[in-house]
Length: 403
Image (cartoon, rainbow, N blue to C red; front, side):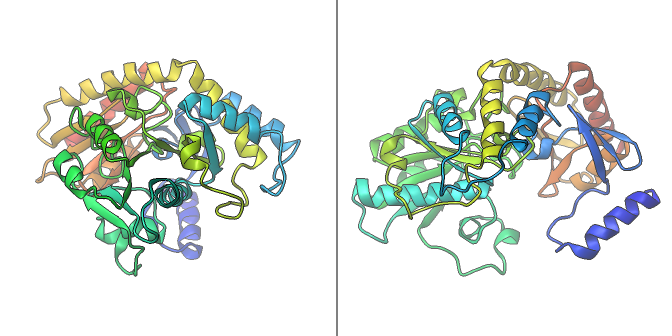
């Protein structure tokens, strides 16, 4: 580690609450799938800021939209209209095939918004008695880190020391349709599900599971809420991960890549019956729907409309997953994934994932571990075949060389 890197890291450690344990690299610039640190060393980004950078670093069209809007108007709050929010909402609802959208900022804020909306739908539309609405969630879920959200997490580290928690959530095993069916009762208003569980290690549900979730929700008059914050907007080889089973949820929660890797932007998208229950004063956000975010979001939707990046994700994702699965390395227990999104689960005896990510860092590849046992790979969808092969060669080398 150079003196410059050490100085930058020490500065963060001196003044930041210690809620992250980042790899020892200080990134200064980025373009496409590549970044450069403060010492001039280049790295291939195989994490994409947990899918916030689906379109790569500084995508020209997205940067142009941001710069043009920055020169015009930055913030109005929702106390007034601005000339970007309407076109953005129109374009986003068309992309999702829904009637209404509510823009927010972070993914967690999007989840909180959805929770409020489906509860109010339960009382106003379904007729659940006040104060009794239930939402079914899943083991190993990750929907954010607010106190309400960590209250239905099964990650002990995320929960410890932050209670008491918000009631009204029932948690069942992910992938178990019978357990879900048993958990739904007359007070259930929604099922909140990640079509692929990202933080858990890129867990892909059994074939037909999402379709069964959709069936149960329809049969029992319960809203299916798909958290596509990480899995959506091209990451899995389709616009939404739910599409792989032909499923259309009642509610989409979108985020991360929606802001083009430039600003925070999330949204809840649903039909009028659901989002129409919110009225002035019942929910809001000062920065939600700000002009800069909406201008970028419009361009994100325009990029996705072509389908080009979804096709790249499907094609290159197949290449990535095949390469990893056919390696036959003893350190690898399982490779899960869809599109340009993979979780490499390590064998129980193997060196932890953190040490392997540190070794990858030395070889010029940025990746991140989760739960000590899994290496997550999620390169920008704009990555070239040559760069992907270069990165995979180093990933396999680390898996082979590092214990």
